[in-house]
Length: 91
Image 1 (cartoon, rainbow, N blue to C red):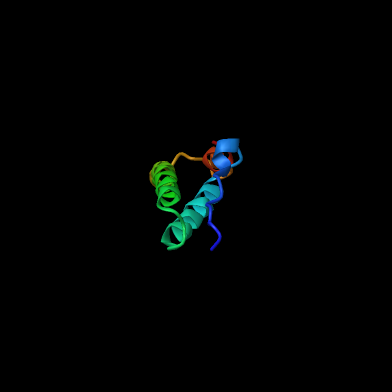
Image 2 (image 1 turned 90 degrees about the horizontal axis):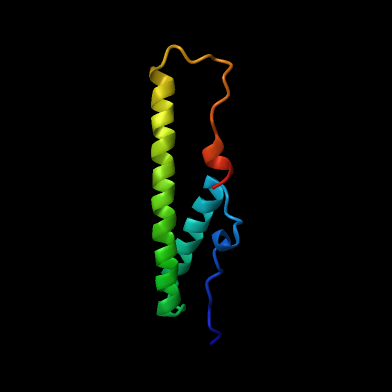
C-alpha cells in the first residue's frame, strides 16, 4: 500500500491570499483528515492547519458581518461608494 501524503499548504509559499482559497483549503483538509489511510502524524498536521485556517476565516467573517451591519444601519453612506473588499484580496 502506497503511503498517502497531504499536500502542503500554499500559505507557506505565500500563495493562499483570499478568503475563497483559504476556505477551499480548509474543506480539502477536512476531506483528507477523514481518510483512514493517512498516517496519524500527517492527520494531526492537517488538523492543526485546519484549526488555524478556521480561526482566521471566522475572524474574517466577523469583520464582514460588522461591515454589513454598519452599512445596513448607516444612512450617510453614499450609494456609489465602493465596498472595502481588501479582506478578500490578500493576506
